[in-house]
Image (tube, rainbow, N blue to C red):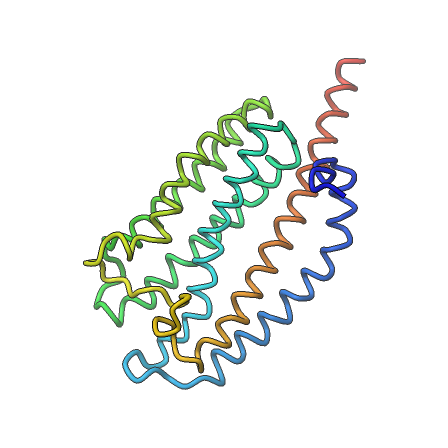
Length: 243
């Protein structure tokens, strides 16, 4: 079986129909367990107090915000090279999810940062790159809406996705590029010494798992919707020509 088989809309819809109940269910369970565990059954941090518990929303949302754009990058490249409509529709479907996750990241970051830094916003490298990434998401969505021809819209949004990937990379590695930023280092790392304490780490992993499953469920669902909308538009256009 080849992965390219699922570039066929019928096969993709069949696959998504089989996976969606499991993705929705897994996301619901992980989020309920992770958020309940994190917010109600972990201690306050000795420096940050109960404010630290926003990590269970902030970190998973930030990971999805960045990786959603990378997913869009891959599927946009597939469109530019292979001209598979399902791939670019998946990128289009992921964009509103990515913008929502970026907005959650910015809002929870402001709530977390205010008591820690004494301000709701600072022009920290990572915060600034996330803000720019948010505007790239909005621009990507607006470009789809502004162009009537779907293939032309797919081409231009794919190019925009390539450009915006620079800021997705900066959002991920800004702390490593600029040591003088206010933002703390990574909460998760291959180096265990840099990770948060286990009492926060384990529920955080469950929350991240929940956010990943939620992202996949939303993208599969929205991609299926985009495929059906494309079919409806094609049928309407054909009926208009016949008439």
